[in-house]
Length: 438
Image (cartoon, rainbow, N blue to C red; front, top):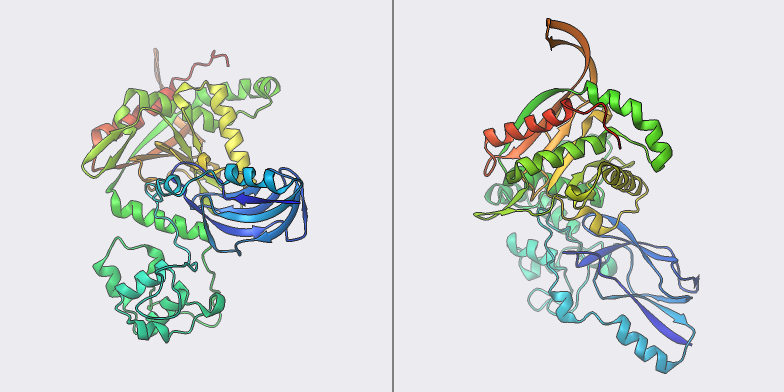
């Protein structure tokens, strides 16, 4: 029997590591081709690693909550074959060189990766201490002026008595909450690395630890507010024609395409048209440079069943028809709800749309999804009395109205551009062709 090394595969641009969540197969289990071996989490999305071969799992190389680099051996399977075949297979499977792995950028624009305490080998100790410490623990200790002797005295709750980040933060809190001063001196510090000692907790309060995704969301939101001066513009749009047209065609559309026609693809199409008219909305900022994006990739904020938020991206939206946008929206929304998104599905966005109207909200002021410079919130569609201009004079009628809220980065988007852009989206929605075929 031969052995097969199951590696952590490449998971998309800028993704160089993942955290082990849960092993679906245990040593001794038989594995078929495409069976899920392990569930992993990157800094953007949870995913699964299937087996490309059939055999028996004989070894797991990592425990849950440990961080694995792209190209690391996750597990070893026993498969049919001989030693000679195995040697060739290992060369193919291990084809990712250290140079190629190191060339992957570990920083994803706009999101600092979640650091996880994992034991490392090599120069991981402080001074002459015999214990090993994760890079995060060492950095915090150095920033807080904790000596090697003092660090050695901290009782660890991690594997083999290892000092975790939480152990160190708890220790610092007991020293008098010095992290508050560190936060004032370093306003760009991760929200995760700061401990507040002013919160009063009674015996009746419930303490809920943020999960990995919620910590990332918190860090991403704080980073965005600290990076971009937010300005908001609002427009109220009469979308009566749009509503009536959708009601007219949605049944035939679903029969023909086997897809539901929601309002979201209609909004996205209008956004794409407006971006073509105002391409300086489709940019990002790098230092003093403005990067004008060639592709229009629309992020679609989606609420998950657990209450967290994820933003899958519709790639090359300007090249898609309304049918194509609809299929992409439905596919991404379905896979987001079932936790089937791939890392690539959440990367490369150039503009984001969030449909807060699905929760009955009239309007909102969304936070920009860095490194983008604008985000649109669409509110609920509500019947209202409105003034209608006719050739015989103004009359009052019942119309379907909605608010559009655009948040934008005032470093590079001024009020004129932001205001004209959101007004143009409203124009496309208001002037919807009732005779349009799709």
